[in-house]
Amino acid sequence: MSDYDVFLADCPARTTLDLVADTWSVVVVYGLGSGPRRYSDLHDRIGGISKKMLTQTLRKLERNSLVERRILPTAPAGTEYRLTQLGQSLLGPVSVLARWAEEHADDLAGD
Image (cartoon, rainbow, N blue to C red; front, side, top):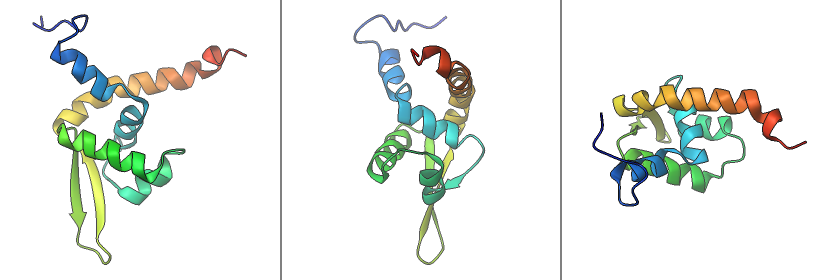
C-alpha cells in the first residue's frame, strides 16, 4: 500500500496525476506506444495539436523521465522520441483510458 493520498492537496501523487492526466500527455504517450516516432510523424499522427503544444508536451514528458529524445544523424537533423521504461509502465493505463474514450465517445457526446 502506498504512503500517498491523492485526496491531500500537497500529495506528490496528485502532482503526478496532473502531469499524466492532461489530454495531450495521454495522446502523446499513447501515440508513442507502438514504438519510437520522429517528431514530424508524431505531429502528423496527432490531429489538432499545434507544433508548439507538441513540443511543450514532449519536453514536459522528457523532463519527467517518461519520454526520451534522440537526435538522428540525418541531414537536416531529425528528432525521434520513444517511451522510457517509466513511460512504458504508463502505457497500459493510458491505453485503457484511450480505448474507453473511443468506445464511449457517443455515449458522452450529449446528443
